[in-house]
Structure formats: structure tokens, C-alpha cells
Amino acid sequence: MCCHGSCIVKCCCNLLVVLVSAGFFVLIYWAIFQPHQIRATVDSATLSNLTVSNASSAAEVSYNLAVTLSLYNPSVRVGIYYDAIHAELRFRDDAVLGPAANGTSPPEFYQRRKTSDDVRLEFDYGRGVAVGSDAAGELETGIRSGGAVSLELHVHLRVRYKFFRLVKLRLKPEVRCSLSIPVKAEGRGPGVGGAAASGDRCRVNY
Image 1 (cartoon, rainbow, N blue to C red):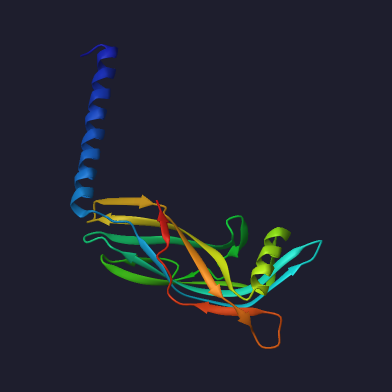
Image 2: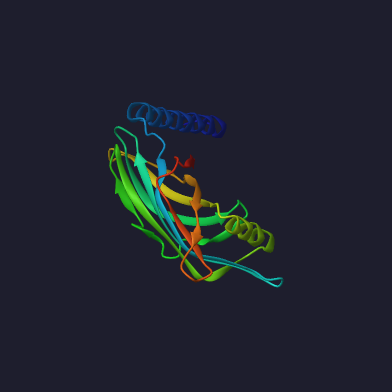
């Protein structure tokens, strides 16, 4: 038998040994299998029916956008489960133009090592989405200048790195992609549209 104080100390020591051993075990697995960060690139982006209504009482942006996002797993020995994918489009960093209207395709999947998979994101806001008047005015100015429209794509992921069948590491990386889409008038309507080919690699933050 032991006194109450010594039992507590012994239990704490045993718990510390277990935690240190578990941490060392995970560290060894991490060093051996080396799960690298996901790489993301926008393969294509097609914008259509972009119009801006910047009335004094309310401002709206109407548009349709289809984006193909390429996700690459550079790890040599580790597979990745994509459990959830949530995308959001912004103009500047503070003006939200809406989440992906139809979810993503595919909504979840397993990615093998050293492979790339495409995810399709669709934003269907032909009926308009409310934005701040200053953001609407800036976007309208950009459209009238006849240049490119700059948009920000934010994609929130929930993933699991799998080491054999024993260890699964859950993470929530965020992908940020800058889209620069040249636009021009579409037919006789007020809307403009355009397409962008494969762009620079997106930023991935863990």
C-alpha cells in the first residue's frame, strides 16, 4: 500500500511516461512517412453574367462562376481523406460574394500518395448577392476599365492524414487562391464574362 500523496505522484509519472511515449511514437511515424502539405492550383475559372447594381439604398452583384481546383498530395507514403470541402468567393478580403452554391464535386474523397484530383466549384448567383456599396463601386470601376476582375477564392478543408491503419492525423487547412479574370461584354446584355487558364499555385495554410 502507499500513502495518498505518493500514489498521486506515481500516477502522474506513469501518465507522463505514456504521453511522452505516444508523442515519440507519432514523431517517429511523422519522420518516416513525411506527410507534406497539400498543393493547390486553379486549373480554370469561367465567369459569366457579371453585373453590378450600385443603387444608393442597396448594392448587388450578379454572376455565375465555375472553378476547377486541382489538389495534389506530394507525400510519398501518406494518403489523405478529404472529409469536407467548403468554398467561398470574395472580392477583396472583406466583401463576401457567397459560398459555392451547389457544394463541391466531389464533396469528399480519398487521395492516394503522389496523385492529383480535381474539385469543381460552382457559384450560381444570377439573382444577385448583397454587398457593400464601396465594394460594388470598386468592382464596377474595374469592369468599366475593360481589364481583369480580381477575386479571392477561399476553400476550407477538413482532412485526415492516414499512417497505415493505426494513426490518423486530423487537420483543417485553408486554401486561398487569387483569380484574375479578363472580362468583356457578352452579347447585347449588360453582363460581362471571361475565362482564366491555369494560374499560379494557391496559398495553403495549416
